[in-house]
Length: 494
Ligand code: BES
Ligand code: ZN
Ligand code: ZN
Image 1 (tube, rainbow, N blue to C red):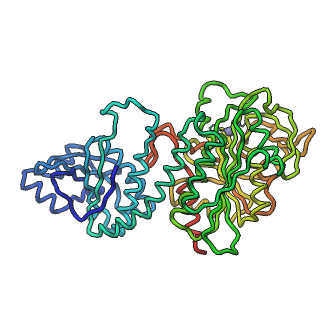
Image 2: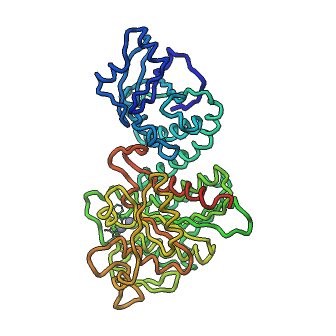
Image 3: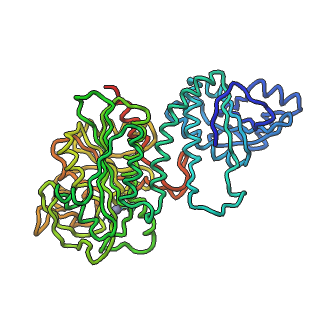
């Protein structure tokens, strides 16, 4: 699908789409044109029960051209932060009409309180995010199942500025696509080593890639991570993506991701129903990869290190057992209880490694860590845990801004007691029922010293089973937009 920006188009080649607020503010020229063809737009809108509410639409043929009217709700509710969501909704409407070329008119009353070229680019971004598809493995798609929409052209006075803006804004949707593509890949195709290869593509953008293989990890003492992968025929990997766009002497900021390319549960095997969902247990790692892609492609002036722990969690004669004791890289001994709580074991070693080696300003990890986070929030928020109020506040504020919502949950000594082990320094899952996401975060906290750190439990948000405004069914790439904005607002060029 092509997205363009022009001052006008040949009317007959395109269907024309107008944004209409709840004031039913149809453009005057169009009202006149419609009148001259004996069409009264307001009456027509009434017949379609169209009130200009967000997401409503109706269609009319005026002067032999198709005109679509798309409701945007209250003008004052629309701003540059949320107009992307509107673009996503609009895509769903446009796709349903099965037209090939649509011109969207932006220079109209409903958006006059915004910089129109910026609004157009953001709107386009929402369209592109919602239009995501992963058709790589379909060989027999019927023509009627294919998307008809091939060209969307925005019509506005400042078309050149919008085109320029779009070039920049598009980079973020590219990065979201990178993350979503990784999550969509089936686990027979995407496993630690093939994931590593996908990361190597970031070299083209100026990202240094360092790979820790099992031998290297063994020499570093990353036994909690290695323990998770030992039941798989696939080798485990840690990939370190280093992007140096900032001042040479500035310490990097660090993003870490859980990359379990398939989580069968290991010997604590998951039940069959829904196990296929566990291909997305690498979504945290995918988000970090997408984020690095974006920072490097937009040449952010910041030093960032992205560290992902890639393993496959499988049952096997060599697999880790419940009751095994392993020595983590930090030196703390860990009693493994339920081998399905593997994510925290992977993160434990990469958190320690990152803090020890890079002395970052802070670390943010993303992980599809617990099913319990969905019990807490449904699919509306991701969990935020932190040892640092300032970092947590910044993340929270950004999350509100970009509608990738976080809500903070506590850490503390109450939960610490739940991790008491009879045999080792710490047990890796709780002895008690309840608070599963918090005790998981509490466990992670053991592998962080004084470095400011935040943990995002994205198990509730990484995949959607229904279409969302800017995310069709499937992987959301939750965190890419959030953390890109977070870096932009607080660290880029600072
Ligand atoms: N990968 C899962 C968590 C998960 C569940 C992610 C659903 C996405 C959707 C994680 O490794 C896991 O299995 N956690 C266990 C922990 C338990 C054994 C303490 C869980 O949440 O049940
Ligand atoms: Zn698991
Ligand atoms: Zn898992």
